Length: 581
Image (cartoon, rainbow, N blue to C red; front, side, top):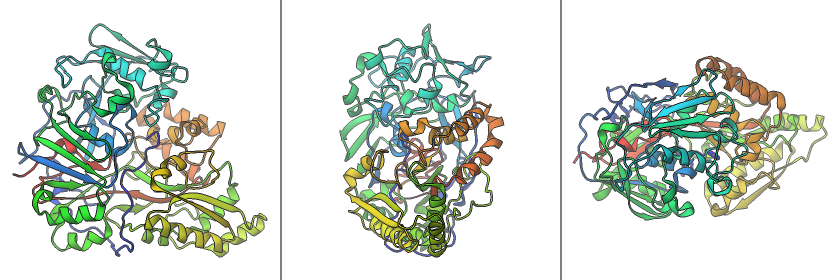
């Protein structure tokens, strides 16, 4: 997200167990009607239910009360809604922030529903959208949510000098989006948004954006009163409109949420508030936490860990703990990208020819519970995905062929071409993966220059597109912002993607830009069939080495009720969780 990284860390077991299929799906995978997830990635939908109303459908067997503990090794970077774009803080944010529209997860698939507003009405030329605010919505302090607060949130989303991680679609799609720099720099007057009366929000576009109602599910568009905007300090206690609010917060370590007394279930078609409190603990050791949660002694019986399931725990799962495994869909593709500005196409093909897919899969501790080999840009969950014949040497499988790769270099007179990338030199798995890749590429005739950096510095290094490396920069993965190719190709492969800091391959191709724009401007139902041919065309440019499509596989304690997976984040639907006792 500003680069949409997948939140979960790679599996930490040094050696992956051989797993050829998933065990029986857990009862926790079931949707409201009892359908179950088989562990296979299935296509999501662009479903919209404009007439959905609160309260949300009760969860069978759910009870009120108790403290639900949530554990993870990875720490969310912020809870300022304007700056949220990573999937962990986005998923947690659904407990706190209501937005103009929202996803209701039905039978494991997302359906767009009204939230603070209706799902919007476009003008005949598709350049103006009108949204109606529903009455009676209040903040945690009891004050009314005003339509002006929604407009202010839109304006605030342009302040990327302050909120660098937030989503960027508005810059290219909203009127004057490339000129307006947010309320702190450009003032309150912005041509892209206006209000009428007490309940009408109007958004003006620079070009058609049929997926706008889906985009407005992001926390960036939760209302913020201008008078209560404390800028960089807002992240320490943002105003809640959802079923929970901040109680105690230690940035980077712990967050305790309590009930928001001013949230009204009858106005909300997608959220519940079963637990009395949520306690989030971050920075835990993933394997130790997952092991404790599976044992479920003491408070861990009422806990869930949302790190990727470690391969070392699969025997425990298969030996009778299937009911504690939560499987679900995700919408992410993980890659190693190549900078096309610095690496010519024949050399990129040689890299792909030599790439040690199987060895890297094993070293990462990946398994069929958490991942599926990738060979496309879009994952199978996105409407329009097509499993076309893999582009040569981009199948995501195989041990690589360094000898054949070296012949390509020799033909191009490029033996000794230097490949450089950053890696985390404080963790064993990145070190192992780097060694495996270095060995294969060296055998192919490349000169390799992996640059080790500390964990704390890695994200900034990967995001610096002027850094002295030519491979492996961020984003190293992308998760769909909503079920559509529009949240992939315009974001990752147009020229603006480089300045936005979220490019795969650093492409600057005017013809490709136009092709992407032309498809994105089509109505959603017409665009769907156009994305797969474009997907294949971009793969043939060899912009990235596909690694895997990730899948949701988490463990929870024995006192946690049936958990539903959110395919838009690849994490649990926290707003539907409950404790058995």
